[in-house]
Amino acid sequence: MDNIRFGSFVAQLRKERGLTQKELAQRLHVTDKAVSKWETGRGFPDLKLLEPLAQTLEVSLVELLQGERTSSPTLSVEEAGQVAARAMDQYQQTTVLRYLRLFRWVCTAAAVFCFLFLLPYLVCGVSQLYFHWVIEPQMGVIGSAEGPTVIITSSAPLFPAWFRPALLALLCAACGVLVFRLHCLERRLK
Image (cartoon, rainbow, N blue to C red; front, side):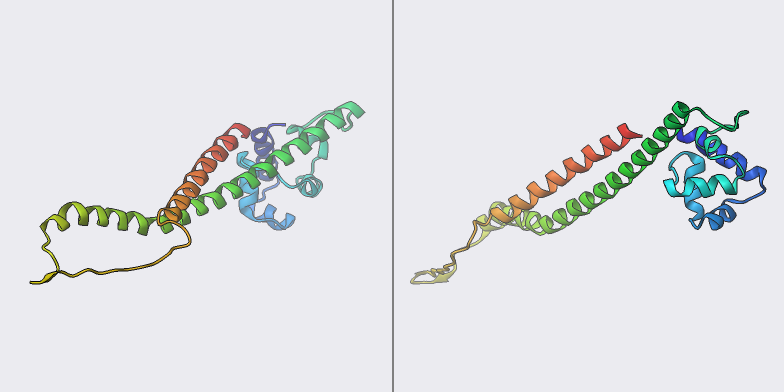
């Protein structure tokens, strides 16, 4: 079963009945955006909506699933099995695409958050480079006539200073690669 063929058949039947997308959606208790997705081939109705949709459009379930009117109101057992299997496959593919899209958005959000947390480290690193290469050579010695003042600081960090930015950069890169791979998988499944 082809989504485009199914969608154009639903649109044709809806128009024959003089229904708008909104009116059809209200009868089926879905949104008009869902009906629009069905008609444009970007989506497929939930399996439990197929029978009410067929009744609303005044066609048999078989005709609805085949995407065309048939002269014979019955199908052989094999034909019915094939139609049902195609409908199940179409529904499963739509569901898989929906979850892939959701997971891709979650990974995108994770990559953005990692980048936002990494940004201060990048700014700090650039400013330190600027300080060491531009400002420091121009500075004099702090201290008095007796000699320079020595400032001693002591801290024992749990992790080295480079660990957190490196981990954030690694997570950001991993999320970016995952988002790209999910996008490619979505395009292949469509």
